[in-house]
Amino acid sequence: MENIMVVFSSTDIPQDLIDRSIAISKEKSAKLIILDVRDRGMSEKVGELTENVGFMGDKIVSNLKKQISYGRCDVIYQKLIIIEDAAKREGIPYEIVVERGPFVESILRVAKKKNVKIIVCQSRESLESHSSGFEVIQL
Image (cartoon, rainbow, N blue to C red; front, side, top):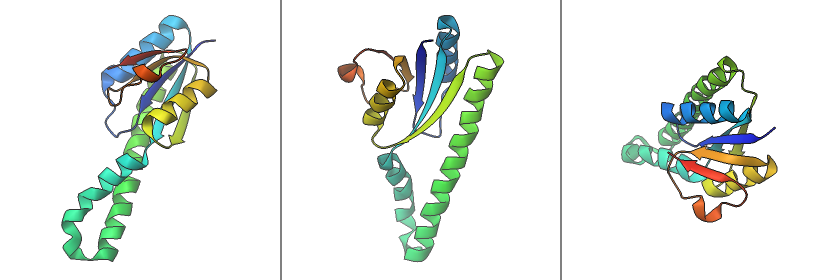
């Protein structure tokens, strides 16, 4: 069975990303690998939102950063459920993978490990120069 991978690392997962990955998986009778990349750089950007409220004190700002991070994880989980439900409705086998690390390196590591043939991802960093043995579809 061929493996198709859909990748995201933000709380906003466009519907066209979900639809395209489901359609390709169905067309190819492939397993869908749903990859959530937890990139420290992205988390740091979210944490930087609290810098403007530094007047509140370090303890409060630290707690606020933690709450933002936990809230972000909850939003991502809710989005995962949307992709999971779409795969179930279409009878597509799937696997959810959460990977920590830099975005591109994480994608390449999982693609190699899971023998992925097609990667569908949001246009963020180009994977084309790294592609080796798989097709990349960036939306």
